Amino acid sequence: MWFLSADNPDGIRGFGFRGLVVDEAAAIPVNVWNYVLRPTLAQTLGWGVFISTPAGRNWFYDMFTRGVERQPGFRSFTFPSNVSPYFPAQEWEEARRTLPEDVFRQEYMAEFLEDSAGVFRGVDGCLLLENGNSKLDAGSGTVIVGCDIAKHTDWTVLVAIDAKTGRCLEMERFNQLDWPVQRERIAAFARRWRARLVMDATGVGDPVFDDLCRVLPQVEGFKITGNSKRELVQGLMVAVEQRRVSWPAAWDVMTAEMKRYEYEIGPTGQVSYSAPAGYHDDCVMALALAVWGERTFGTGPGRMLRLVNGDSAVEAALRRTLTLA
Image 1 (cartoon, rainbow, N blue to C red):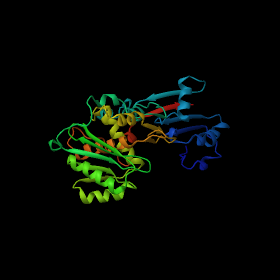
Image 2: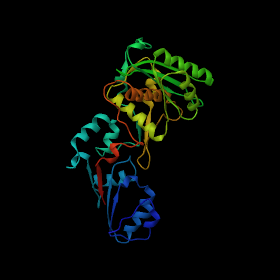
Image 3: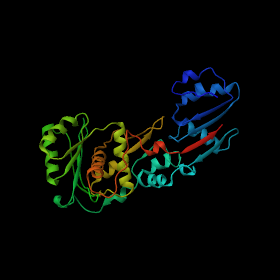
Image 4: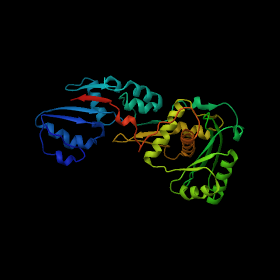
């Protein structure tokens, strides 16, 4: 019995195996299967067992469907995490309650999801049937302002949210303004609500963040990377699905961005989030920053699931989908 790593596929070439057990098969590039692993079974007509968490509809999904269709020589099985007698029941319920539905379905229920689809479910249920901005007294509770700074042709967006109720109070959106003018508008917006400002401090936002720290009492910078963006978006997904955030139906731009927002599952199963090509996601990111600030610094009920380095309990879940070939 040999233990080999597909991280160095060239080290597997040239062998002939009677059987092959491939763990986390969906994370292995299709070319490694086609050009390296499959030839090792060719001369022996050997067998293969492919075990993995689903990761979109890639080559592992194709193998799985052969077993589902009962093609000769293939059998497929799928098991959710809680089938294991060693999987804690409280983790299952906690994950179902706090994780986005798509994450739970893939990582815990072992379901194959589409490679690209809408992100936020139940957006219409978060809309408030009122006109314009709320007139809630800024002194009646904790207010968080999420701010996404404009880059190139994007918009700077400010969203004020009541940290106790998750209700959005006001939104301001502008572009093509010089940085000094933007700083003044951002500062005025935060002062109007006596709010804690949570802003994108990445790239062009970094010097603006430094300037605002000198004139506002409560400013939090958030560095947006691939991992931290997943944290932000998945936190907003949970808030939308559980109706813990709401905004006026009159905010058409916000609603349109939320409904257009997409995710894509890459070849390795990594999830990325973005607006479709040619569209903006400034309102989405400002709202996500506000919701993150609400859960981190506010007094709202419950707390957002905090992902560490882009991972969470989902990565350690004992869920498996098994294909035999």
